[in-house]
Length: 460
Image 1 (cartoon, one colour):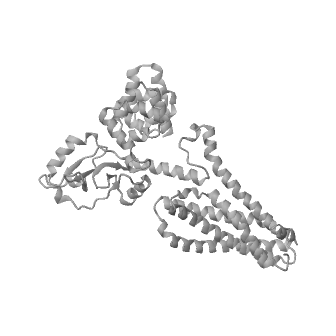
Image 2: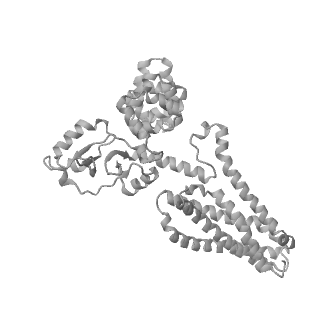
Image 3: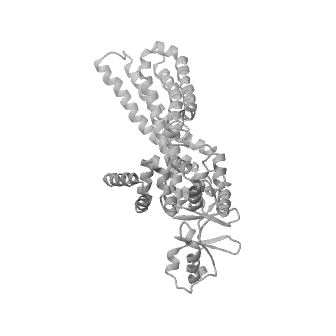
């Protein structure tokens, strides 16, 4: 594959050097869309020229799979008439996806390039809430009525399906435009020509509301194995369709955002290398300040137990071990829960089942680490007298503290995302660094409380 890509690149360099517009156009139009997109990405200086030399349909197909930064570069360098041609050729949902992220002044200028009908459709889609299904909706679809025969359905498809993004599914509506059913094209192909649509219907239609969140739409697609779903308003009037390719882009963007938030930063709305350094700084510094303040509480807790540490300096040796184990268990649990929520495996309603499982998991993991901590003290004592005559109690302090801190970290990491989701926040912000900081502070309290319990009257 790599060799093939290199060959295409070399061929492109040769043909572009000829400056023969006809040869360039023929070469580009004979390549696969994915290969043309690769050429655009690898030859950014020629991006607009590549798009301009493609047939308009292939140009639109290539443009929609490029990243936003490259799309902006192309539009900025295309002649105005070519930009108008490209934007009018794009499917309404793909056009809206590009336009919605542009500055208002640029958006206003590009909207003027659209044909009246396309402009009306675009403004309508842009009027829906950000991240709603309405922003992804394509208003071009094929619909029929209950009284149509199969033969009439095929006549309708031949007449109206040219601009539709997919004809895999045909939608049945009533005289008021309300959705009644959706039928796969296969059912019409296999039916007799004189059979009526109502005889094929089962009325088990699954639809999305135009105001539904895009993340919810992703879950519906995944659970129902559909290539397209109808979009309706609050009165069940069919407004458009949303297709699986749009949902795949949504899933990819959601995954990127969640990964960034779980790393302890705000979601980046531009490619990393394209984002101005000051904006990247603002995205990162907020959480770093919050985490730093949180870690300052760790110093406060250490100060509170200063007398205990002074009396038993040996306890300070295990502080990094205790708090890192708690932070690791919390980070592990939060990552598992956030990922399970993202793919729809669990919801907030499952909190009790999750709590029970995490209590058991925390106790088992804590017991293993606690036993290792105890053995560490007992084994080391055989070779050195570093822990003194009360080494067994020190070992028990470390072992029990590890069990308690790991259990607390597991519970914190698993419950915090659910709590944030319940109150309306993104659970991804309960990132690994955030949970680790929380458990660091509380872990110290658990550790010194257990130490006081075992070592009171001995070392403390």
